[in-house]
Amino acid sequence: MMKRILMAAALGLAVSMTAAAPAVSATTSQEEAILLKKKKALAAKLAAEKALRDADAEAAALKKAKAAKAADASGKRKPSVRIQPVVDTSAGSPRVCTGFFKCLFGKRDARVTRNGVFQTASFSASGGKAVKLSNKTTREVVDWNETKYPVGSIIVKTPERALYYVSGEGEAIRYAVGVGKEGMQWSGQSSIVRKAEWPSWTPPKQMIEREAAKGHYIPDFMEGGPGNPLGARAMYIGGSIYRVHGTNNEASIGGAVSSGCIRMMNADVMDLYERVKIGAKIYVYQ
Image (tube, rainbow, N blue to C red; front, side):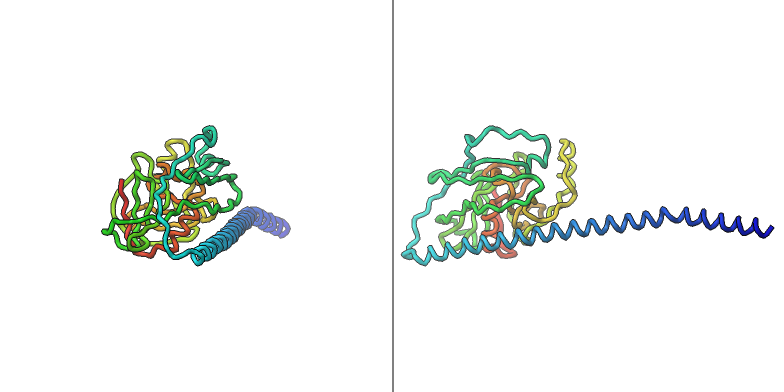
């Protein structure tokens, strides 16, 4: 009788241990998943930090070269000419792509031509790989006689595809920009409430749903970095979901391409970022 009792107890213990095993395995698997997620996040952060250092070093070199050139000048500002950016459609045949993000990040070769001096800028990137930032710029100092805007203001003229920063009395800096698509353009007056370097991207729910209806998948969140659609810098417009930001698709500058945000070349947005103060007024005109 005692043997039967002992055998029953042993059998019950074995069943209990067998039932507990999946829980231990599940816990271990969950811990491994968390560890892997942390490793990926750290790798992305390190890559973004390296890209930021490289971009800042490039910007510093450009600033130094500009200062040296200014020191050699006579001090008399040369007459400036307003240059309209246009896309050179002869640069290549239309691009064919099968997915939303393949079109956004995939290989693209294009030229952006500026009337008058016919300078060109090229862009080429491959999805999933780090993108070397271009130092191409559309920045141009122009005469400015619209005295109702205080120094430090931003004025976006949508039909002109241009953003002006009022840099001083009678003077502004003009940048070529990409603007909202037809039906997503807007106008109004606000201010810059926040600035971010290598901003992350959290697409609004409306955008996710709108693109999903077209068969395009947009993630809920993207870490900041060279592959992020917001580019190297972002300035957030108060009371709205819109931003002035960089882009990893230079060929879109000069077009009506966004969901309402104002796009700039990365070199241009980095230059503007250093000039604009929190609270600066921004005026957007259609």
